[in-house]
Amino acid sequence: MKNAHLVRTGSERVPVSAKEELEIEDLLAHAAKLQDSLKRVMREGRHYGIIPGSERTDPKTGKDKPKPTLLRAGRREALPSLSAGSEYEILPDTVQREDFIGYSVRCTRWHIPTGRWIASGIGPCNFREAKYRCRFQPTDREVPKEY
Image (cartoon, rainbow, N blue to C red):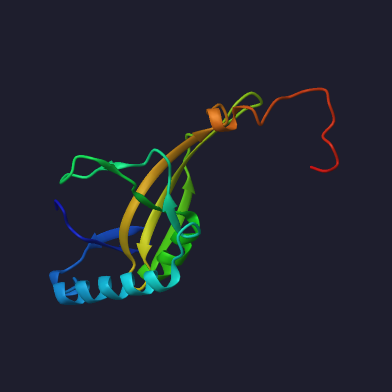
């Protein structure tokens, strides 16, 4: 069943018949409606922006040009327009010890009206990553009341 479209029924995923797929005209109309609504709602710097270092090379000119990136607030605006829902699952390989914490989380996206599975991805994280490393430093000092 290579490249089959799947529908979620309870915990199962079953093939979708060709009759249930969107026609190209419907898909294009939906894409145009989505782009129009996002242009009206999204604001640069709040919903999307340029992240330094995320440039891409323009194939025509060969020069790097900034790549707009959807930010968290923009994702919150876009997902309802796509009728997409998310489910998060902490996977069994999660480790919690006194000296180490590590998580693996699976995010699964669903099309809400049809129950169709859109995508899923796994993201690992642990507190020894550079961005978290300095936040957990056991000391004998008391935590200030301001925190």
